[in-house]
Image (cartoon, rainbow, N blue to C red):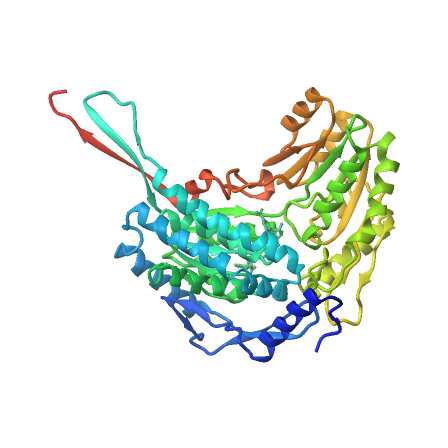
Length: 509
Ligand code: NAD
């Protein structure tokens, strides 16, 4: 039973579906290895609970080194015998497109699993996460039979062919904030290039990855090409990252764990490591902004989306002094519409944080903000206490100094830090003064300023006069400690392919 009562017929439909799913114990948490669901070799498992209300969702395989090894061996066999890697690109495309179609066909089921597992509002699981995952898989499938090799401009006594070859077995380790999308960003390019994949989803969000593996198999992906080993980071994650037969590691997660990925690589087989890590993105509003109202709406919408649990959330608002009071009061006035509510109600825009640890973490940062002298002008407390779930009010801190903890560290919750600046030079200096460099946004009517500032910002993506434009066709990734490599776009193929040069001698040329 849940503390939430459905308040509309639409909410009732999702609530009934959720109750049926839980009551029937229909959610299969076993690993997916070599084309089948399997229990762990030791029998170890863990319970996964919904952050919406704390109810039990499923018993999930707690994969350990032996299970990871079985998955890597299956992936290696599949790669070596060429059952996928040597299929024509057009054939791989066909399977991936079918996989994407199946994701769309199962959209209600996948969206419900995602919302129950991580607490995000059902309207976004359905309208953002599922379509974005499907589009990613489809896009890389569609692209792969249009990728050509090169012939280098060498002296004419020889021919040098430069081709992309799959790296082999790819280990993918993903976070919990967008479980399906993050998995798709690895799977799309890795599978399209002909690799085999072993995916270790976050222990906080293992359910949709397991269903994706079943759907991929149904689409015709051969056994062993895509395996999922749910489990803890220090067990399954570490075993995968240290495995001597994994050729490349695609990691998305915190900067702290990303650092460990490089260490695992150096301690094992020097596997290629591609890290997509945290952020503390700056949103710069200058006094010549076209629309203060649009800027305020955009920062609130982007920051509070997904409960603030987005790597690229614009969590630092840098605003020119003369405008600051107006911008802050507009944002504060918007906070009532982001109050958390039942994630299964399709009108809800802010759901639950992923678990109790994350709730404590966010409340700890709110406390630190107060203690260090920032001014809490909206929210600042836990919400929906008594539901058994983990909710925090949309929170705004004004008078933040860029040296404070809430300005420097990634909170990963609905907490905005407002920092005031005098002029362009100070704005750029403050924006770049964090260890991160994932994303930023510049708001100004002045074209010269917009270009100048965009160039000066040390971030993988800079938006001008907007924040949310996004497409699979553009690369995504960070500068500095936000990571290396890029997900999305054709640039992602670089991570999952080796460049092979073949020299051919031409006699008598
Ligand atoms: P996390 O680093 O705690 O965990 C990420 C994954 O690593 C999980 O699967 C976890 O089980 C595993 N892991 C943890 N410890 C490990 C270890 N010692 N060895 C091997 N694996 C280990 O991150 P999280 O809390 O799941 O996700 C939030 C973080 O992800 C935030 O920092 C966010 O910014 C980042 N993120 C980045 C992007 C991006 O594209 N740059 C996208 C989404 C999330």
